[in-house]
Amino acid sequence: MVDRFGMLPARRNPFAMDRLAREIPFDPTWCGTRWTELLNRLDQLNHRALIAGPHGTGKTTFLDGLAPRLSARGFSVHRLMFTDENPDLDTTSRQQIEANGGPDDVWFIDGSERLDPAEWRWIKRRTLTTAGLVITAHRARSPRLPLLFETRSSPDMLAAFVHQLAPELAISDETIVRWYRESGGNLREALWRAYDHAAGS
Image (spheres, rainbow, N blue to C red):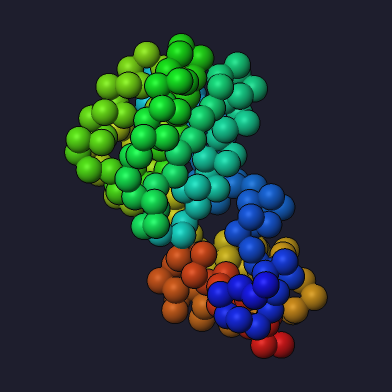
């Protein structure tokens, strides 16, 4: 099996996003805050909030870090992700929400901007009885829920990821900064470039 660049087997990709999430969990201090502050703020918002940020800046990874912290508080966390390939609230997704709508349930809706207004109203109505609803979107001024946190990236963040995931490649910071700029700050795109580099080395 080959990955995006058709050169290096996917299982050998040192920059795979699942490996990044597993080995380098999201750290809010990258963006100037801490988990304790975010959890306190989420409590104030009755666990109904928006995580915003441009493409590839860590919104999904943020949810990965938030989920176990809410589980430790006794909540049951459930999650749906909407993508370009899967943009619709289908029957299966609706059934999942209806089956998990109790007072201890918290729903994560990743990619909420892909939902049309009718789908969003359905989700909001069906989760009124749940303990919480946390959504992600690209724009911080989304009218759907109040903002909890805005993710952002930096060349230093990318450099830390690259050096930790593949120290043996000894990639220069100058190269990493170039990847960051060429990717417009999208860390996912930048890591694809790192993978391309690794595949060709």
